[in-house]
Length: 66
Image (cartoon, rainbow, N blue to C red; front, side, top):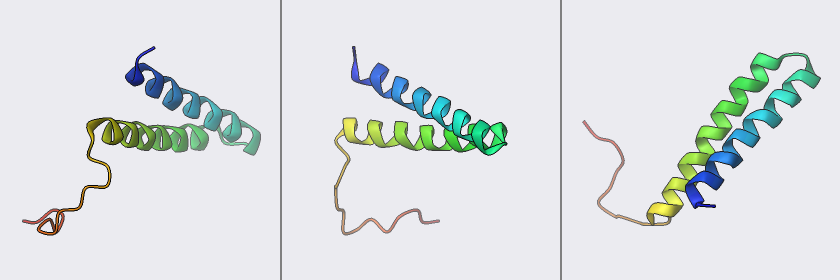
């Protein structure tokens, strides 16, 4: 199983768990929204780690500038 597929499965699993928790709390839609947001964050973290960009410090980078 490739890393990308595994991270995709983890994100989908988080969405399903969040929907179940939302169902227990009485609001499935809130659970789905939170699950999607957490799933996107997990996918971004996995892709950043896979790309080798984790922990890089650039003293000239001040973030987004206009």
